[in-house]
Length: 338
Image 1 (cartoon, rainbow, N blue to C red):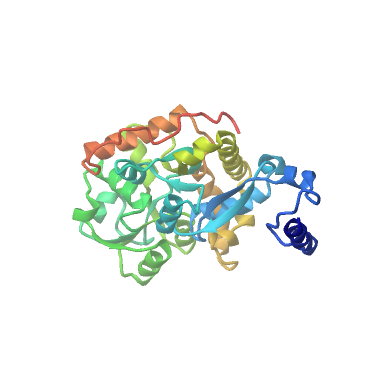
Image 2: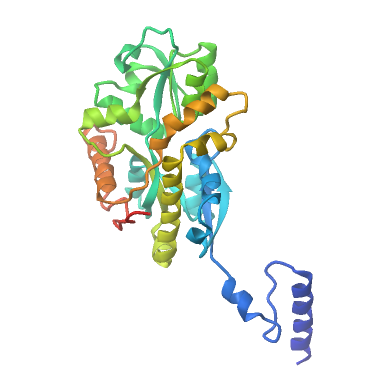
């Protein structure tokens, strides 16, 4: 009994001191406080300079009822870190593309896509006065693009392959992050860059020219009319199965955030700093609404899943993947209109 009393005194001091995580004795526990406890979802936070970096700001402006049943803990990390964090369990929700996830699935990973994130926003950028006007004009030239492990590179490789262009064979390619590649481009060290938004808009705002969109190349060459899927929300299957209602709520929240960005593109100007643009980059900032709204999908249904299946089919046909995974990469549960 003495030990129990002492334990209660320690717990009482912790409660009175407001220490997080303290566990009170039954006599002092608040049933109301316990009832108000909400699950915390660890979600990837994209670094500035990537399209997903606006999500936190966009979500903060939504109706609070959309996330009233859970809290988000944003976990910073680049794509490589995100994969490790998700596999290790320190991250509940990340983003994955079809080709990269197919590779992991064939190795036994249970990571599954369960909601919308981003459409393909890879752009081929050249100097305004360059003689290049179509991707084939760049054969034999020096370009910079993201690392081979990124979905941006992998999907660019698939799309350009449909035009008969092999990035590894036909270009002199330098790999690096978007901002570093843009610096190479600005110095004239490369003839073109394949970069993502909003970095592509920064280049155009500074006077560069957009030669092509990877998503448009994919659509025309593949015959797929659906929006060019880049990445979706992803989680380990065990996490999805542990609380399907929570996972659906997270997916609906991101769909709503994407919908807000599409419906009110001025939000890109309002949150340009979160995306890594500096205040003096006014030309680029003013271009954001017209260039980025269609990057943010709201649908998660059969049309999206068919586009994912088609990406895998083409990648296998072109021998960019050894084979298709033996399971669907997506959950197959439609969100409906968010």
